[in-house]
Length: 249
Length: 263
Image (cartoon, rainbow over all chains, first blue to last red; front, top):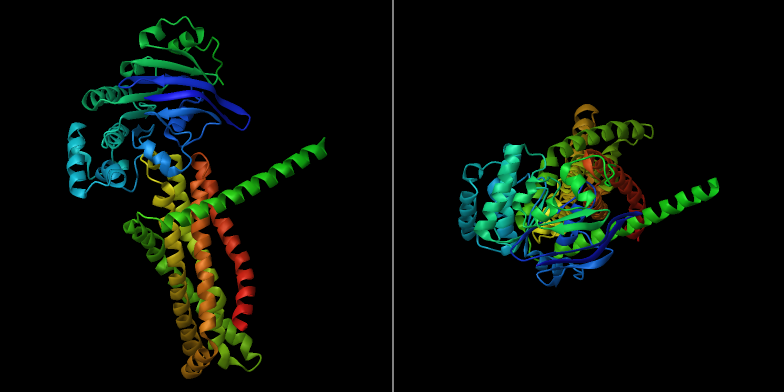
């Protein structure tokens, strides 16, 4: 569904991704983990076509987003994506209702009445009915994440990209987001790519896990395989130790 | 060694500045293109016209009123030395219409609305709202920049018109009410001295300043750096760059327009 092939990206003299390759299988959720600053979010932005790799290619549903030169061509490929951002990235000037309806009205060109029905449906599914007239700053970060999820899923995308699902959340809200991802996956069925450094909590939404370090994917497998991995860097990261091959910068 | 590093720094400065300059022109080109191409979202344009134009009316009128009043006092004082106080009306009107109206309106709008536009776009950028738009296949240039550029282009000449009218009224009140000039003299000398070319010249200047306002404030917001400091820096740069650009462009426009309209 998503194919990242030998992608390189550098900012000035700093190499962020150094030949990253990863296959994200249809219908499964893959999580990319790694310490802060190793290029996980950069990888996500490359997949979204917001950044362009220095070399390598990224295919989404068979279409090469790195070859799409114009914004319009990239937009055609982005139709397959729904994105839940780290801070939800809701539009401050719009109500929760308008935030959820936004992609339907702007992207799908749906009539207001049809959009209204869909918004109410998804708001009901995600228990957001009581907040529709509120603005994002009037609700908690947990609710904002739910609204972000509703906005990402309302166009029924084939792929859901999730950036750091529980950053800034307390353990209860964090667990709620994981439950939400699993519930949404059961209801809507999508291919998922989650970026996270929250281990081992994030394993509960992952069927595959890849660890990125030093600009490369150093380990890949199921959550059980990762836990059993003999790679000292994986073990150090999983156990949250400061001693080991990963140097804290 | 010092010479080498100084040359490197200078070279890097030149390359960065040229790159920024080029990027800002590409940004303007893309925004103008986005203005022309459908789909059009009239409500976004009206929203921005409201924020940039309508909400600035009161402060522009207030500045205009007192600018006109000051011009009347200064004009009457200077002209009295030559026994020509009858020309206070033309002095006030020509100064406002040809020069002070467009320039002061632009500087006020840059300070009031330009900084707000840059800060708003900058915050949208650092909170990933701009990325969210792109991820939803919505072009941020079309959705965010084009309405703001258009609003600047439309609002600036209209606000300048208000500034001029209120300014002349302020000048009239002071010259006639306080300095004892005859109302007939003020009005008749003013109407005979001010021609359509003066109004045209002021209008062209305002439109160009409107473009500078929208271009600089949107570009600085869109290319804002990280965090609160990034927004702070972008907002300051936006106000300073746009204000300086207005004053520099004003000189060249005045030179060209004076020549064009004199011929």
